[in-house]
Image (cartoon, rainbow, N blue to C red; front, side, top):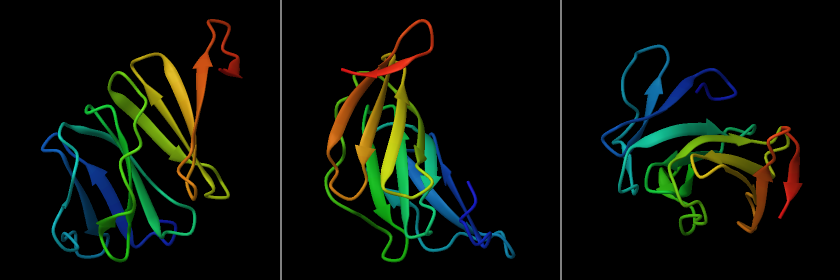
Length: 128
């Protein structure tokens, strides 16, 4: 996942970490971010480039501060199976996560509150 300015790439790994890479040098920027207890399947960068969100096989999402390289707040919990996709809304105020538990979760990235969404077989999304 590229940062909005195109200068960094963020990746998740089976070793439970998130890495930030310099596009021009291909080098790690600092040490990998740690906190997940299982594989990291998905990462996304906020539209302003200030935050990273990660989703993991540990059923959590985590928000990271790109500048300080620290976790911002507690892990977001609620999924009951692997979190295999995360993305920010275009305005950066929300995060959507998809899980093998068959649900989507919509998170307000600033307040960290969760709304549970379920995907119907017809593809509609509704608030639970």
